[in-house]
Image (cartoon, rainbow, N blue to C red; front, side):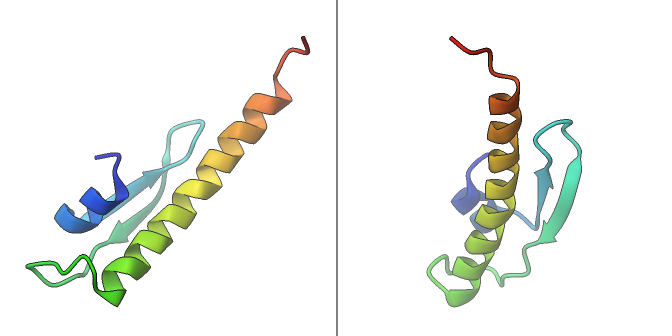
Length: 72
């Protein structure tokens, strides 16, 4: 999935890829008990961790794109 909430709800682990080239950056285990309470502090912490990992890659991708942008 490409949706963080869905990954936290359903996955046993989440694989985060780098922007370019697409390589595994990290594998994050989702050690939350089932059935999962998506409103728990632990689930929120997991969402924050994944968001930060993805934000780093998005920022890197945008920086690369800007570096190769052709001026108008």
